[in-house]
Every structure is written in structure tokens, then in C-alpha cells.
Image (tube, one colour):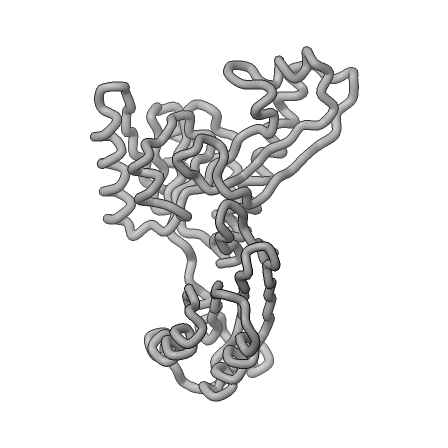
Length: 290
């Protein structure tokens, strides 16, 4: 491989957030220069409302260095600015668990995108409270775990999920139309590490058959929202949204089909951006360096 195209193993991603003040960019760029690193891409944002500064730097090491040495040497910079920071390897695929119930369009889409390399993830397992998609998952040679959930066994089912997350060293759980409400304890345990997808008709059209309700009201925009999961149902920090315009002549079934497409698109982008370390939490909102 030529010097102009260094291996991904020589590349890293630094993300940080901290109170906004003068000298942050200078400190980061000076550190990278002094450690023999070269910036490939850098994005930053100062939020006037919260007074916080956010930054994502993709850089490559021009000299021999390890991830451990980078983390150890950057700690002083991080401490001096009260940074919440992380450094990860550029070739590191994020290990994820996908969760699904009886609607498989998002699951199928993510499995395919992962296989063709469109998502920088390694799917460690698929978890479902039903067995409908066991055969589909097996065709991708991915472990399938059926964890039935009832009103009586929910704590045990969630404990089983957490055990799997820890055993497989999973960084992200994706609710690909998983139709179970997670407990507050589980949401807190995996805070910032669970992404959900749902239609954007909430709160106008709740409950069963929201697309049919929307059709009855003559809705002209179909939307989907991908967000982090919190104890507040469907109110976590939003990562991505997608919309599609529809006409007066569409049927309820056609609305459902459009809805599936926008759900897949919004969720896939959210998973991609999160796995590329492009999403930083900013209170109840997100900063997305897409």
C-alpha cells in the first residue's frame, strides 16, 4: 500500500465534548503534531445554548504508535479542558446486537447492509421475543437468540439480554422494530448505547395501525425517527429523521410500504453514524458530524 493511502489500522478517531473556551482546537492539533499524527478530517461545533464544545477528529499516525499510548498521552490534554473524550481505531468495527419482534424490514435491511460493507459493524447476535426471523438470521450465519418476554418474566429476560451484551462485548443495541418497552433500569444501564426506530406520527396517531389512522386523516408526509432510548418512551435524543411525501390517492397499505422504506433509511443512517463515532450527546439533543 502506498504512503498516500495508509492502512486503516494506522488511522484513529478522536471525539470529545467539554465546556467551550479558547485554545481547545489549538491544544488538540498541537498534541497530534507533537505525537507524529496528521489530521485527515476535523469537525467541530460550539453550542451557544449549552456552552459546550464538540469535536471529532479523524487522524492517522505517521510514526509507530499504539492506541494505548495515544490514550495515555492525550489524558493530560483532556484533563486540562475537562473533556469527555474517546479515541478509537479507524478499522474497528462496532459490535452490535439487533433486536426485532414481528416486523422484519429493518432487520433485513441492516443484515444486508452489514454483509456488503455499507455499515462498519459486526453483528454479534440477533435477539427476538419471537422466532419468526430465526431462519433469515441463520442465512447470514449470525447467532439467533429467542428470549420470550411476558409480564411475569420481564426482569429475567432483560437480565439475559444484558448477560449477552457483556459476554459478546457489545457496544450498541439496535431496536429494529422490537415491540417491547424496556425497563428504566435497562435504559439507564445501556444509556447512549441503544437506538430505536419508530414512525413519526407520534403523538398524533398512537396505538394500533397508525398508518391507517394517518390515512383516515389525509396525512401527506410519512416520517420515521431514529433516536437513543431513554426511560421516557420514544422521547430520547434524536439522531436522524426521514420523510416522504404522499398523495391523496395512496392506500393504507401503500402508506405502510412507504413507512417501511423511511424507517429503514433513518435507522441505517443512525446506526452508521453512531458506529463511525459521529454522534455526540448534547443533553436531550445530539450533535451529528455526518
